[in-house]
Amino acid sequence: MKILIVNTFDRDGGAARSARRLHLGLRAAGVDSRMLSLHKTGDDPHTDVLRAPFRQRLRNHLHLLDALPLSLYPKREVTHWSNTFLPGSILREVNDFDPDIVHLHWINRGLLSVTDFVRWQRPIVWTLHDCWPFTGGCHYPAQGCGRYENACGSCPALASHRERDLSRLNWTRKKNAWKDINLHVIGPSRWLTQKATKSALFRERPCTALPNGIDTDLYTPADSAEDRAAARAFLGLPPDKPLVLMVAMNPHFDKNKGGSLALEAVRIAAEQLGPEAAEILIAGEADGPDKPRTPWPVHRMGVIREEADMVRLYQAADIQVVPSYLENLSNAIMEASSCALPCVVFRTGGNGDMVLHEKTGFLAEPFDSASLAKGLVELIQNPDLRRTRGDAAREHILGFSRLDLIARRHVEYYNAILESAP
Image 1 (cartoon, helix red, strand yellow):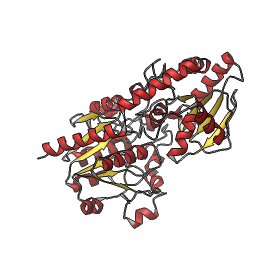
Image 2 (cartoon, rainbow, N blue to C red):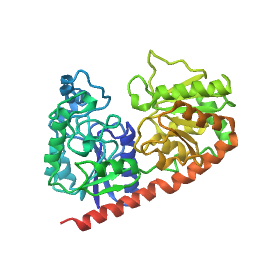
Image 3 (tube, rainbow, N blue to C red):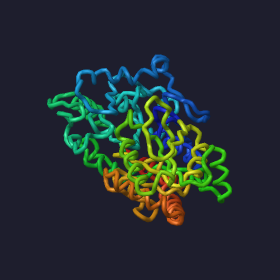
Image 4 (cartoon, one colour):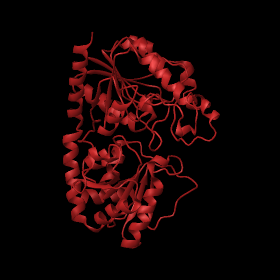
């Protein structure tokens, strides 16, 4: 079996990590998997970079060109939006490798055009990492918006009151381009799978809930208290304070990450526990001029790209907070849970697939900072509870998304598609 996995990046970002893990898991299972990306920073010999000189030269600017139509909507309130207007094709790479199935992941920022799909003449599997594949351009719909269930238009994210707006144009391009392709949809979380099945673009397509995988042999808890202390010493962290980890908190750019909600939750928790009760670790955020003040000391760990370094950080921490408004199947939650770190998150999106309330972590009421603070306080106050829930989180992930298990499930899924193909 030959599988071509397609993602804009080979390593950077949550979708890239998920796609790369699947690629490696398939190869370990004996599948001839190759990965194709527009941006390659890793050294995997079975990952190819797109051979398109013009797009390679402009690869860091393609997203700016793609966003130009948004200038027609100056009152828009949207953080992540993709039009995919630019011409793009991976037909040459598809024909050269001749895969049995093309498996798409996250394809925005200039990798290819939605009109390219029909030319491949092969079954297509698409693992969703956000809502963009079935919307008119937004990656996450505005609060309460279900217009993707019909045909988009009058888009609240664009502050548009016209039915035939940019969102309707994008939606129509997708509908026309994909009407005759053999497309199968995977939602890593039950939440995103349900969204896809309700969408006008995908409701007639087979949609399957199938989690992303994680290498649970890499993402492991510290073997002992001495190893945990060594991780803290290596990172220059205090040896005896409860450490609260926040990954990818960037409130100045991405409101969906809920940075302001986390900061308010910390303020509430500090009022109850005092200024010496804990310290905060922030990872995934580059240093900038604006650094919000917090009642607890903050250690800025910067952007961490190597997985081994991320494992060390999880092993050093006591609790993780993920305050996002919406997450599909958060890598941060999956990774932390695999390292036996209990997570405090909102009861939203796919979080409930990984965090079992008051068993493996804490599901706070959306989007209530006081509820988030409650989860923090009970875990900071009770080291035994942290250990119990952390151990339960590890066991849950072992059964939910262990990479070899997920790779086998994908092989079974591919075989079923190929057996049913005309």
